[in-house]
Image (tube, rainbow, N blue to C red; front, side, top):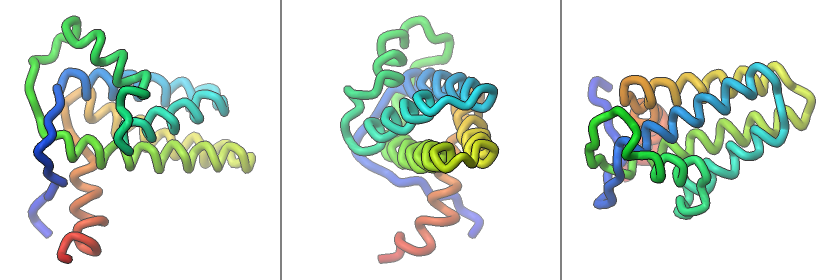
Length: 147
């Protein structure tokens, strides 16, 4: 497959908010990697759940990004919201997996899971690169998109 596909919707969002939220996610993931804490990974899982499943007003990270968007140096651009919702679902799965692994005393595996999450968040924040579109193209679309 040579083409990268992203989910598409009529809903739009502000790229500044998305990128600032990614920065906050990156920072929290780094804090967890350096010092694993069950509350931190639980917070990330709950926050990603709120963004991924339709209650973004309950996401503290998104609310912070929204409140500070005027102070963020990136240019303001309206973008499609569907890829960001899919990426939030990937983030939810990764943070939930890290939470379960930490509960099972698999601390290193939990940290490695959040390294992946931190890497994805860094790409979104630093260069606006959405890894969710690649995951969607490689994993979801080949099995579910042709129906």
